[in-house]
Image (cartoon, rainbow, N blue to C red):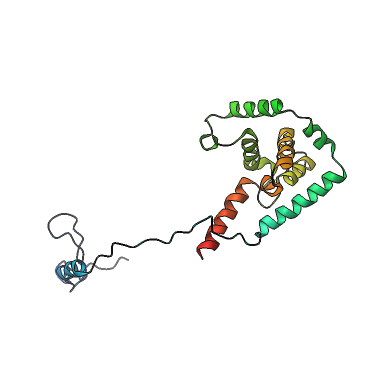
Length: 201
């Protein structure tokens, strides 16, 4: 049974009603004067020269690698030792893949897209292929694992990873720092955010 309604004039409400039109459209607590608040705001001095703290990223020291970087370094070292001992048939086939075959592979990937890649104009074809490889979820997660090890895992699980990606990985690994080639783009983004947070602390 609903509670009984009181007569309209029996109790005066203590809370003021909201009005969004008219001259007095400010909501204040009962007993507080809006004019005193306005005077106190005008009497406070204004601080103009407040400069935020700027962190120079060039000066930030690089300390020991993070857990993900250490795992990728360890995986890369194992893969390099395994490549020196014995090369797999897939690696031999990937080494024979020409640059024109890689460009043709990328051209077919681009034709499948409905919109152009806006943020990748400054990347080389190898960089674009490796970033596409990082973002391909059908081959498993890309964080915390070296790219070459991820390709071999996908091959072992019969997920049919593209041989062109392995060719790009092997070609890039010969000329550059092995860690930067083996780290996925997502790992780089996550670690850069962690480094900025450490530097700010």
